[in-house]
Image 1 (tube, rainbow, N blue to C red):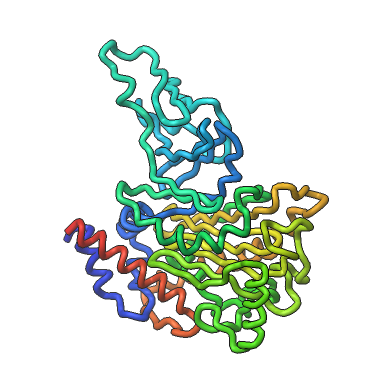
Image 2 (spheres, one colour):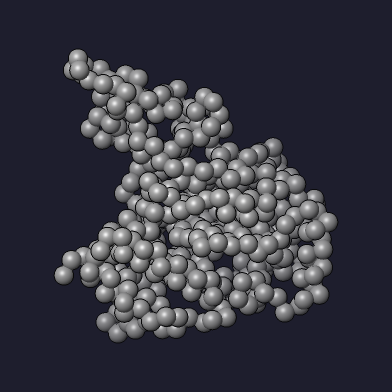
Length: 402
């Protein structure tokens, strides 16, 4: 049986409304499939454009085993490339943030312009055509200061996401933010278990006591509130601030604004702002949270004083790296307007708690006695949405390669 036939058989075992068959959570062949069929075919949020503030700024990272680099060109635009030299394939830019007038491979000093053209390749043959060896580009989109890449030559349409989600993102002025802190958490769990955990708050009251103080864990479905009068009052306040609420959604994305628990201005331990300067055109900052999420890997919360980004990128069948980023107003001064320790406290605790839950989930899924159980149609509706999307996306790839 071919690898794709084996994987197709696993998907055929899946019972609608239930968790996935065991092999889809721990089989090495499935991991390779997921990278090609899911992460290789989807838009990935890599961060905010404020992380690349001037010409020559670079952000290099990996999507699975694949190194990529995003560059701010001299014309002010962003470009994305496979971070692989066209000579013998060496990684050109070191992982992380950097800056360079040109991109120079550390191996043999092949040198590329910020727009990707090869400008120097020492000691090559006389018939060597320099113009044929520029960096390989990657699809890139910028939406209201947020940056997305797709490794596919035929990326999913971005237009509807831009049209519908853009108005919700715009008031937060992400282009004039700054990255206040970044962390990476290694989780010994399959990426789908990490994301299933991140798509529900069924576990939040007992699993995240700190986050639950501010987060409306008692809502049903997709932030549906029982107190309609309170929700109507919130919507009226948002309308007065010209802040769209949503919800809006597409096949692979969703966005909406929702209120926090009473007495909480932001996601903090005591409800008080963590940053003295508000972020964007948000009035006094008492705006709840604007959450947007993309399949397969991310969710973000934009509050009145900071924005939190969560991104899960697979590394192996049972290993996922979770990157967390916190953004604040670019004029906010560390030690004056905020402290990093306070800013990151709640979500760092939450991420560590989620890591422990996902790793424990993986251990149980690996059991000989594992049998996929049903999702709660009320508490796990976003998990079911994610899994349905994953299965449909995988089927498209399977059909195309049958």
